[in-house]
Image (cartoon, rainbow, N blue to C red; front, top):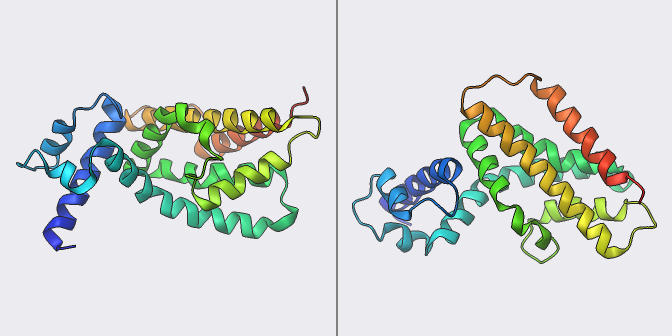
Length: 201
């Protein structure tokens, strides 16, 4: 891809990330993204991404690459003896690291808006290491649960984590100081998630 085209594509990703996080993924006019990226050609976004979904996927992919690398390291370290808490940590920690940067916080805010899609996590579009962690969690749920309930429980876990991270991201981006420091907050989120997942019916 020529440098100018790559630069244009990156500017569109950057402006989309900020605007989608602030105004909403589905309520942000694409024209506003193009203008924020400094583009005069209104068709630039469609040329590079095909539309809103393509831009959204590019934003998510730009963060998921690092998250997947970190998640693989955690899963490989835990190995076959990974506990439920180890697997929850492999889901939460790489995402929580995104809270340290403005772009990462915008990403988390965007992900929290996509909860209606979370029940499709077994449908073939989930990143490899994320799916590895989710399936590991599903396998370690209480034995009495049916397969459908196991799937549902993982879905609700994903919602809990995404909404918590998105809320904290928005709080930090608004300049508000959280009452609980980062490490304690993350540890508490993982403890809550592990407890909810392991609850017996």
